[in-house]
Image 1 (cartoon, rainbow, N blue to C red):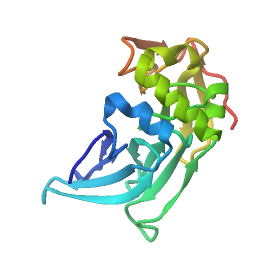
Image 2 (cartoon, rainbow, N blue to C red):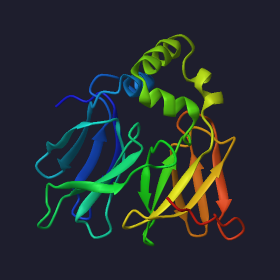
Image 3 (spheres, rainbow, N blue to C red):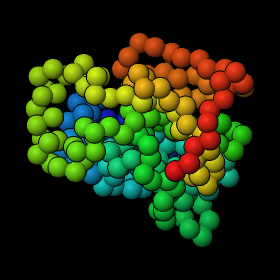
Length: 223
């Protein structure tokens, strides 16, 4: 099995590895091209470390990104970045193999998702919803033009148009409970809660942010 852009990964309690392959056409440095083309090239894959076998569970995903095994070990939650949604794939029980909505219409483009062991998932949002993304996702010609510009100037040219990045917190049912964001924050690709602190980072920009959640509680988020 060949991979082009392996992305999120999580390990179930039985040792099974679940991961996403965001695109079978573009690599990490070309991810923007994949999103702008708007084609479902992502996959959800399961790897058995005992048999060394990898099985494709889902195909035709739109830039499959972060993934997290549920605390009950009955499903995995995975994010599709350009669709601004996270979905649920059942790995156990009578719904095994079934896909359903977890949360959609997110306030930004989702990247990684982490479960904190306390009943909440933390979803990284590299950028909030902006006029550019709203227009681009609606009109293919705009995406085509943006992809051409990106080939010339790279991601540096997109920084100023991407803002309101942060972390969205949802409960185990996908209901938003808090949203940490800043108008100047961009390219947030991962974050996790450790005790009373939130750590936020980016694989694109050189920063790590630590927030004391007791001193800076988030406002309640409503979808």
